[in-house]
Length: 394
Ligand code: 3PG
Image (cartoon, rainbow, N blue to C red; front, top):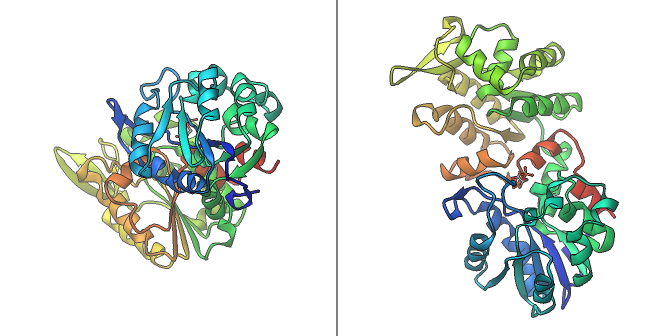
């Protein structure tokens, strides 16, 4: 893959795909971590005299966070310390004129690519190159930079189409993500995966993949993922907890059970859980269950057992919280687990919505790498290649 080190940036009109898809609060951004992440790439390209046309999406058509990119452009101005122009269209004649008129060292943010229906469809690269977005915009550009690691699992035109027509380069965010997530097999051992949160099917797939490929020495389970494994192991958590797991996935308990059959010695499950009693947090050992209320966190005995494993970890890879950390009665497990993980030689966190919530609680301080990707990071962890990364090889 060619990186910015291989690019002749001076005076070049560059289409730079970034992922600044962010949680939205009213008219503003609720978290600007993804914008911050791209500052390095944008600032470097501008410093080197490129003419930068930023391509990005926000939300999904029909969704509440499907907005224009005006607030993003304003925030980029502040972060970069120089103005980023905003174009309220993506590939119209007006947008193309704005690109043509860019001075070296300046940037324009083009409108939300998903305002155009083709950008929310999946294409082969050849077909993606024939979409309106790519066909109309490519002639206005000299090269294409993909810095949108977090969208690169999507076969969307702005990700896989441009590399058919323009020389593609990886931006700095992309380079770093691939360097870390693409090279887990070389990271220090023992490797401990901590899989929590509510994306049960994804987590079980990650667990299977890393165990089968010999990448994981231990898999610690927590959150709803942990509860699925406990149910698969025959623990009677109670109907409420079972209901929460089944609501998320019908196959989780069966798939967790299959994995336990193959790798029980490497998979760790909670030893105790916390539930709500009245207004209080109450902890129960597994043999004191079932409980009428759902398990909302791991208990202190689990925290201690997991901390011991994480203390000896060469690499800790975390995805998802240990419980309902948004409720301060149930944040302990997540707080403790994340702080133990930072003591590993190398500590890595998968991104997405959970990461942005954890960041607000300052739980991501001290990690060596916090991915910008949610779905993309999970795909990488399962060993999949990302369509956008394949396109960069062209
Ligand atoms: C993400 O937030 O994971 C990326 O921006 C991709 O968004 P999507 O899941 O809506 O395609």
